[in-house]
Length: 577
Image (tube, rainbow, N blue to C red; front, side):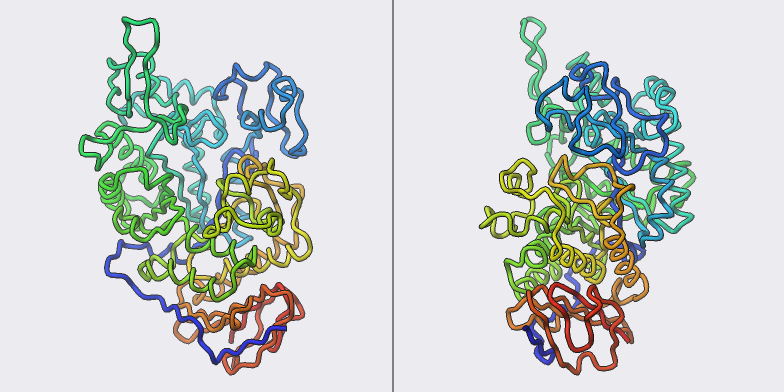
């Protein structure tokens, strides 16, 4: 049994500022983010479902291909899949389930009730793949996310890179309607910007593929060799993201400090389109910000110039960089105001709360290292995620906490190791968490709602979904199989965050780490408001007697047996006035 004494302050982490600050929009401090992977969230309009022709390589699937029924068991293979290959994973990237914007609109009230007031969309722009990171356009929503795919495609075919030629498709207009509906519910919206690369069918690259160096877009991409018409061989070659030929990269300017003028101008125009749709100088009808993909692979000079441009459109715009390591230096240099907080949240959580491979003292030190590298304002708006479209789901991480005897990467606790998070790896547990795992899951929800920064929930996590890394983490939302106990836990913990300003904007101080045990107690305070949160990751009950809880009462616990004197194993509690 662990006993903790709050009179010993092990680590004090007050929210202090560094010397340089990029403006952080104040509204972002109050947000609970919800990440939506559009193709897999909800199918609100079956009439716009993807077709075989809309796939990246339709010739690789038989004419019997069809959209997969939403509630079909993930492991059940359609007839067309069996015709393509006897191997289960060979056909998953060609599955489509028909998620669309109408599906999101239909679920806005559900998200609001959960406690969500911010949506982050994975790419919604026109693209061939299910993930949409291979854009064909940045100024149009994917036609199959809207009500008239064929009509939209006909309009798009008439356009050029000039904004004067751009029209508003039915899908574009439905997205603007989604923004209107979200704003009516006080839900902010940010979207994914992929400014490093496109797909091969992106209008500029498609032109290069047919005209080569004669294309007006020849300098837009990092082309290494154009085809020599005097030879039989096609020498055309270019650099793709991480070597993927399906993702050609934009070229930099000669200095290497900015993007080439062509793609930069286009990105600026596309950015303005979604931030101020009617171009009237009032950004209130546009998106609230951006999440930027592979941000470190785009020159800093571009980011600085782009941020200046978009902040002229909307001074309160929110930008978050995809950064897997420590992010503070990059945010300052590139003028971002937030990041996906893998290093300062997800990875430490994996090491302590999920795996219990470090004690609470080391956990506190890891939190402190990242937190204090940021400005006070940035600390409150970092996106605190545990899982995403690029990782195994929370539930599967918990289910596999003891699956492997040792780590391959000790410092990252194998957080996203390609082998250890793969459903095909021998020993990987593809089942839901056990009883103790569910207790840990509830603790995670509580910590995510009460720590410094903005919680970010990956779609489906809140209703009990599990799954290994891509593609299993991208299953369609299990609306017909909601785990009400897990959902209620998220709804309750997020409710605490909305109720107490100290959880959104207050100072943070570690009160005790249980003398190297697995008990972690911390305080959140703002003006006269004060809360104490205690987490017991240990296998036995923790007891405590402390003046630090005087005047406070138990307001929430993941285990009904918790009190002001004791906390059961694998549980957490919140105390407030």
